[in-house]
Image (tube, rainbow over all chains, first blue to last red; front, side):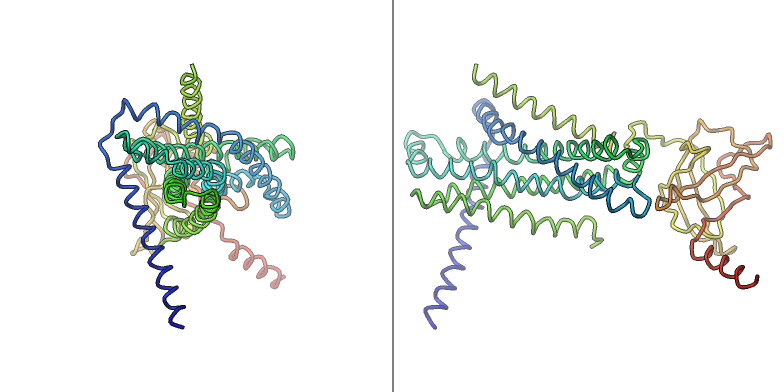
Length: 260
Length: 152
């Protein structure tokens, strides 16, 4: 019995210590005086790795998700004779929910896991320690560019996802199913509000980008430096960031649209 | 050379992001940059506004010419008092124009449609539109229909 309680206590303390370490890592890497000359090329490299290389998966999944919503929306709405509302449905569901959430999930799988594995392997092969040996702060050289790159690129990817998805929806609804293009776009423009819908979607993606890349970098930085430890850390990155994104999405939606 | 391709890639990403934001703003949410803040205010009393909201559009022949700025209850007349701002370039609405609350499509939003009158004198800041027609409330309509059926 006592052993069980001790276990519970240990697990709790471990978790709290991990949260503390991740906060420490965040402040040490983000709250340093910026050195643009050194930082900028590193940031460009990470933006390419995290953002540009995720473009393909974002474009393809955005297109197909938009097309599926268009098709599903049409089959439901045509029963009520209001199939012009497909535009509104596609745009609102993408801009408010699907674009931020699905992009963040894909981002966690595509970029987050890669960042974790990279940093974990750097730790396992003692590259981080050797940076310290030669007097380079790994927080500034390794951690900070990756954090910034994730934080910057996820909102951009989200907006691209939304636009491509809406285009896919219009492709299905207007060009294939023959809804009048004017009413498709006019309904959409009448119901989507820039400051509430689009901006709230972008705020969501900012929060998700911060959380996902934070989890990814921290799991790599905190990984046990063995091959098994790295594989566990990579799995944890995907699981934790997916759970965090979905949970936070509910909280953010309740705060933005739930009149709380 | 390698750095150059990276920078081009990142540039493309940022550019795509900016284009997406502009498209979300202009094409999807219909945000127009030429915000018309000027104009003059006109009010009208309706028996029932039935779901009309502030910022709903005011249109003439289907073309937006203004928006609803305030809806309040007129405590003396016990009617809804709707205040709307008409763009200043639309200065040719005659004083006997009528206003009615319409619905965009079957499930669409409510808006105010102005039907022009014939007088020479035009609406000015603070004028009141007297000839109004309330929103169609579906329940009332069904009630009337049933009542007529019964009395037949």
